[in-house]
Structure formats: structure tokens, C-alpha cells
Length: 220
Image (tube, rainbow, N blue to C red; front, side, top):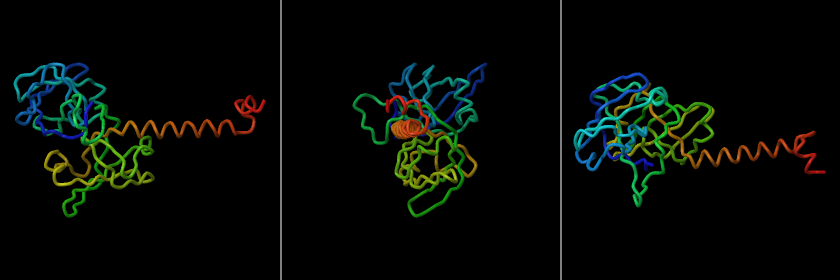
């Protein structure tokens, strides 16, 4: 599990493509890799990856399976790319963002970038299947960062996040431009709530429908 509070920006090193997976090295900022061991989990642009080799305190290797390469932006990574990174949360860790699994739901394009005083605004597209889970002032994870949805238009298919100077300093978002793609993980609590309400209403309406077997059984 992760908290969505980005702890640093890492740089992609050597990349090795093998049948069914890709391996790459990450060079971490100073101190990030302290205590990292083989088998440890690291969120890389929001994707939960397992360290398969720890070369030093500042460098480790990770394997990415084919499914993750297809679903996330890591399939497009090149040497020298910069990525958000976060170590797995420990028991007792302060959760400054919201709980994340590191299981990305979809890639989303940057539709617009705007600047306001002390704010960097990204408008991000969202597929129709995931629009019911995006709410104004709700949580969402973008490239592993826990962010608050500032605005949303479900009909047009976008939401906006407004980034404060500290978020801009600590992440790669400053480098993103229109057309770039981002990894998005929706909030699981929101998904469960929306799906439960939707299914409950659907079942209720089905029981009220004339000729419904469920209604006939109940009325009997």
C-alpha cells in the first residue's frame, strides 16, 4: 500500500526488453533507497513494482510484466525519463494523501495546461467507464500522487487538478504537456460506494418492474 505522497523523482537507466516483460534500472534521489531490499515494493509513476536487484543505495532494478506495460505509461518509458517514486507505507506511517494500491486503472491524456498565480492546472481526460467515480473535491491518484479533483465535467469526459508549488517541486508534473499520458488510479472507497448504490437501485427498480419474479414472490 502507498499513501500518494511522492517522496522523490527517479531517473530511468538501462532498459532490457525480454519476452513478456521489461526490466529497467532506476536511479533514486539521495537517501530514497536506504534500506531497500529485493522484494520490496516501490510505486513508480503510480505503478506498484517489485525490486528484483538492488545495486546500491541509489540504484535498483525492477521487472514490469506485459500487462502493466500495456495498461500504463511505463510501456513508453525511455532511458533518461523522470518518474515519481514512493516507498511502500509501513505500519504507523502518516497517510497524508489517501490509501493507494499501485494498481493503475487507466491511462489518461493531458487535455490542457493552465497557469494561475501559485497554481499549475492540468485538465485530464477520463474514459466513460470511469467517469461515475470522479467527483469534485474527491480523491484521485495521478502518476502515484494523491490529488484532489478541483473540477469535473463527466459529459465532456475530463477532470482538473490544481497543483501547489510544493507538488510541482516534488513531482514530474511540471514537465507534462498537452498530449502526454498519465497513469490514473481511482479511489477504491469511492468506487465501492458508487457501485453499491448503483447496484442497489438497479435491483430495486427490477423488483418494481411489472411482471418481476422477485416482486411476485415478495407479494405472495
